[in-house]
Image (cartoon, rainbow, N blue to C red):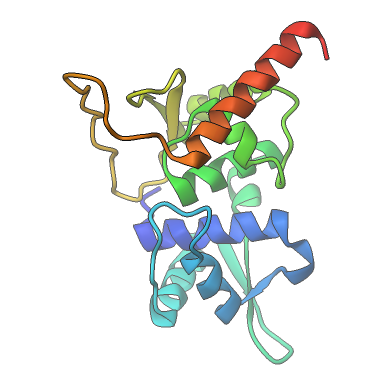
Length: 198
């Protein structure tokens, strides 16, 4: 599968909104453009034009990964990735986060999929990653500087390969983001609770 970055962003947005805002799903073209360009939970943040999103939807329909429902006042768009690739809810949630935010650690994935598909523990996330890796849909990118867990990224063909993370010669002057610190903290708490049987 060789999806472009715009196709990945459109498909990832559809996956996310299907799980997190089911009452407003399928999405109108305007809502889909807004989902693609939202400022939170996206890396990188984009500024896609309606034309680009519409073209990507046409291409995703041709690939059998999305559908447009005609009728009413506006066309509505939805993904069918779960049907096309025979994915369960956890697998869809993990891929959605990777498509919208790039490579992630299992702890980050557990935290960031909470609304779409709560995982019981880090082992459950690792099981999903192992299954997706077996199917050639994700791969391990190794650890980023300052992280204790390997990062995993999707292989849906967006054409962007993460640059190897350069190891700093001395102590890093760049603070981890608040979001990364929170994800790491939540992962540590979850691991402690699991060890204590809570």
